[in-house]
Length: 158
Image (cartoon, rainbow, N blue to C red; front, side, top):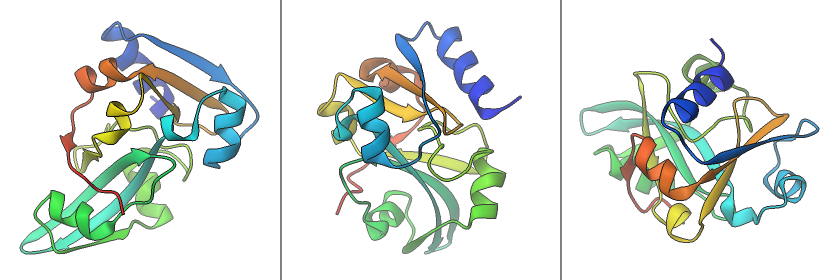
């Protein structure tokens, strides 16, 4: 089952309020927001990070508004670690089944813990993200994301 199939099965199974948008393959936040007709701040930027230190060795999917930058030390602190780095393309593929730019703000892998910056849902009634592939986006009700998503909330912005 692909990440897209897992994602839509989850959203449908939870009766989430969402719409699917098909478009030319795109992984850049600004470009895809224009195609979707959404604000850049609605974009759920999802970064796969490797956190280490303090006895912690954890992969984290750091999710924040696309108009913000992640603070990797805050990502590490959110799970009790000391430092974080971006995962390699091979690690991203293994943990998400996606290429960079297509990663949804959900984890379907036991080793990947999700940490979401609360401003994503506080600032937006709907969030938008690529749905496991670069040519398909989901625009999802922010309350449904909070209800369905299994994540920790933490300030992870610069």
